Amino acid sequence: MTSVDTRPARPVDRAGGTPRAERRRALLARLDLKASPYAFVAPFFVVFLVFGGYPLVYTLWVSLHDWGLASGTREWAGFGNYGYLFGDDQFWHALVNTLGIFVLSTVPQLLLALLLANTLNRRMRAATVFRIGVVAPLITSMAAVAIVFGQLFDTHYGFINWILHTDIEWHTNRLWSWTAISVMVDWRWTGYNALIFLAAMQAIPKDLYEAAAIDGASRMRQFWQITVPLLRPTILFTVIISTIGGLQLFTEPVLFANDTANRMDGGATHQFQTLTLYMYDNAFGHDRYGYGAAIAWVLFLLIIVFSLLNFLFIRRAGGTR
Image (cartoon, rainbow, N blue to C red; front, side, top):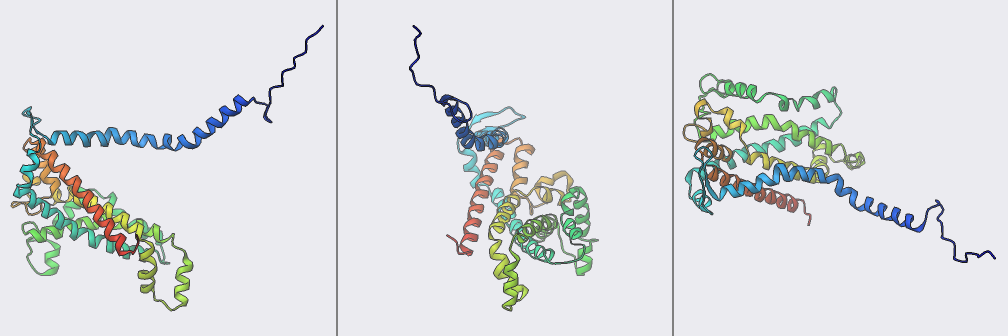
């Protein structure tokens, strides 16, 4: 007598798989949905931790030591470098220079970039040529820029003094040296910010401008009441980026100096020495890496504070919560 298997048949899904295979596919689908975003962004964070996070933490460790690379000194100093820094008159002098150049360069730069982007956003012949032209300063060698602006701002034979019929001491006077360096910064970065503003302007619906024109609004009124409010996130982005770059200003002051032997001094009386120049001079010029690292960390904290202040200011000016 043949026995008959009375156990229920194993259910099969439409694709011909078993429940176990179906659960496996569901698990993989959930993992793909939840884990894939982290897998795609993981390379950035890995690279950041290796080349950004680790040096940042290591710099903090160095700032807590009396650290000399050439001398081989490695002595624990605690917060001694920071205590000395806040009592260092030269540090405060460099900080005032940095903030002065930052204000003189950033505010006109963003205003000019906004107006330039608004002009490029209109219908005009050879618009692409002009849009490409505004980023030409970015691909210009900084050495060539230094030579040209050095001639323009020369005290005795400079073109600027010839136009103004005066003898302004661009390199020795503190305020005028700030102005000259700010002009160099504005010339280089205004076009970059203008293209960012232009890209954001082209995303604004044209219907808004057409409706405003029907209501009789002038182009200037459309600009201030439609364009600027809708550009608020982009303006915030450019302000923060300009803040980071402005407080880390290094190349322009170095190339602007006449005294090639002491470029890091920022002039004979340190009249345009920025924090980055002062940090470099202490670390690499005087083998005070611990003190230089402390300056770097204070600069890092200043950038965070100023970025937050800019964020809050623009957010409140826009009436958002």
